[in-house]
Length: 166
Length: 295
Image (tube, rainbow over all chains, first blue to last red; front, side, top):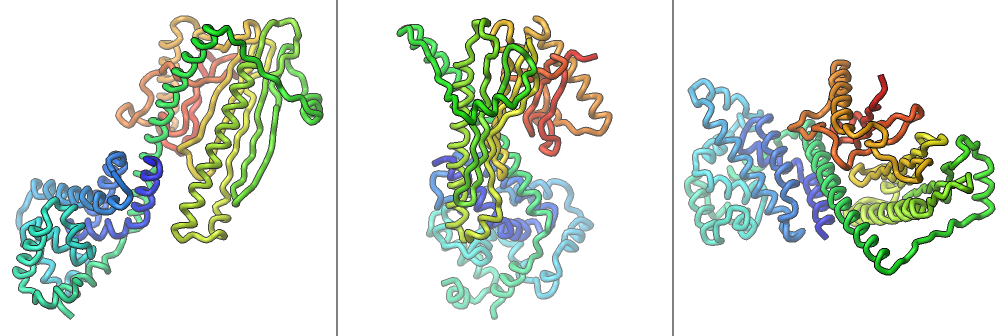
């Protein structure tokens, strides 16, 4: 049984690698950092594969590791230097798509980190609130209230968001 | 369209670098290697426990293990065709077969030791039985693994045609290293062409004067550990200078030989220490060998 969970984890990683990269890139906005975050998440997941309890939990379990790695990369980078120069450099890393009308991405990045995480999981990865709850460790109501608070801060039309979500 | 939806579109449009897949494959290969090592270590452990158990049971009951070799006409014909190198014993194919089912090809060639000289008092039945069981076990396990792989492949949307293109092949066979009046040395291998994780090689070295397995101590003397380590370090240094890559100690590279070190005896009757693929060097190096005691 353990062996086959291991194989399933490998299959899952191979199948969803593009998604992992997008998640990582949404935090780091930097190709090399995103690759590093994904690689070390894969490394850690494979090392800890015995802790997966059942195949259904592979996805949320892996996201927990991945997001943790992304935040670690950000923390490390934050410690280096944050002069005006590097801030400018960071902006230069934005892909083309982000340059035009990418203001909502920048607004999103100003929110508290846990709110960002929840919004990204919800809208980018289209996760259910329950899945987000098990990834972040917050209970369902907390996830909900943080999500709505975040959307309000983005001055998003909540009704529209609601429709789109469900 | 709302801003969130626009953002999602931009998110989905992020370009995936080609390097991503390489880096993920790298991690998977490394992890598979660790898994295989863990498995091998626990297998060695149970094997030793089993041997101890068997020895105790045999001693208690006074059981004698004997094996009957099946001598078929084919077997006799093959034996007759092999040139006799030593006058004492030789290695020949005991059983060979090839099968194919569900596009999984299996090719098995099981060796056996045959004593030619009648009055040596050496019995090889036990070792022959072990070889036979080991080979058959490997072929069975490998076939199960391949079938599991096939099921998973088909269940996840692969077609039978795509499966056939995998050309899955399981091979069990042997290679003779030395066959003289003093030593028999050969390696029995099991491999699956789609994964390295379960490859197995077992080296057999038999002293034909005593009928016992040859140890490194027999060949190199009581300080064989120091001697072998020194020689391997020197050879690694020389080969690194020539551009060959070895893992560092931190990466799991060579740190000295262990009690499980594998070796065979070459045509010059010298031991050659063998490290498995990935054991002390990158996979591209394959198995890494060091002859000990030559100039």
